[in-house]
Image (cartoon, rainbow, N blue to C red; front, side, top):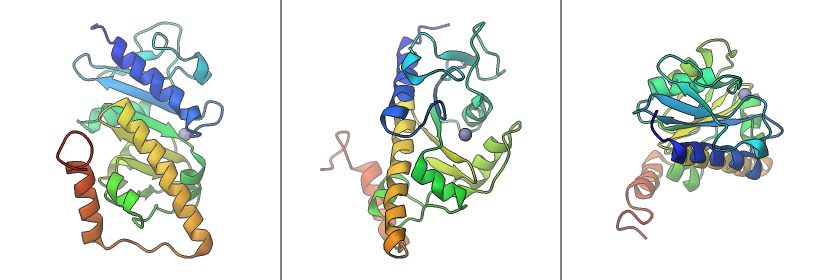
Length: 221
Ligand SMILES: [Zn+2]
């Protein structure tokens, strides 16, 4: 096994950030990270307080077989859904699950979060879809995510909560945080009127600028 101390640290940090960002209560969320070269993911231990999570105690699991690679520590009960996403979404290196309040309010009412804000166009490039309710047996959740996702890096699971993913645990965290943030804004908007969708060509402009020209990597502002 390679030295994965950096990935272990990233997974611990993503889990610490969940309560800090107000996305979880008690133990109701989890973060993982995946190293495809080693065929190993690291995930939150089941039922552990977030402040007790360390880079050393996140649980290693072989992705191809689902085998837990350490004795005496159980991984998060949501492990099967994380495994399914790493096995089926080739570029994904981080996955997060939460029941964050505003986003889960949309899930409770089986409503997608409409593409009605430039912030949603920037980050998600589409509405954040809501999949119908499925139980958590086997691959039901993973299959529903594959079936109902669009290009947005998160999805609402009907009557349940949020799954978010990205090219690292940190980018999955960003998707989870932004999902909750825009859910809150759209919820507020719904108190004073019906949110109005952005025209698709306008949404595309924002998405393109944010993904291709924004930040320190390109020529953007
Ligand atoms: Zn859940």
